[in-house]
Image 1 (tube, rainbow, N blue to C red):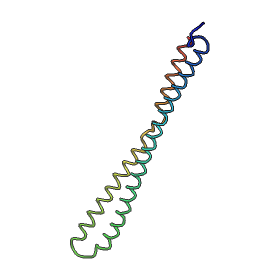
Image 2 (image 1 turned 180 degrees about the vertical axis):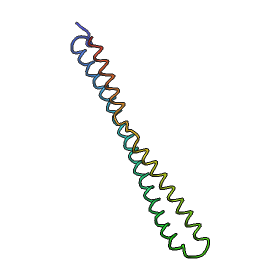
Image 3 (image 1 turned 120 degrees about the vertical axis):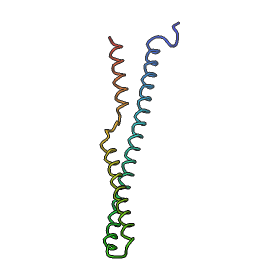
Image 4 (image 1 turned 90 degrees about the vertical axis):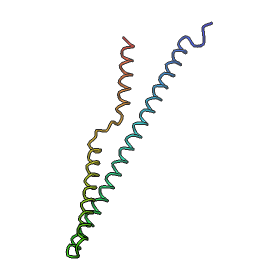
Length: 127
């Protein structure tokens, strides 16, 4: 009597096991890539919120600066320095946001590379 692992049914079972393993690996990779993209978008949202806050505060302080411009001596220097500080912070946050937005997203690149390698292996296996 033939062994349980040989023959057509054994080959089909091994093939299904291999395909299940490949699909499971690819889905895990896909989930990791989606998580990375979500983190990148969260960072972009944080940088944009910080930039808006800094620019808003800078405009508010600039307004106060103009109002206080006609007051006593040292208030102008402090308000001017704070204005410059917040505008500089807003500019830095905007530049960080721009660099994050311009960075090419690698979404699904590892999955596509793995699938391409699988396709090549299957093509060479048929020859």
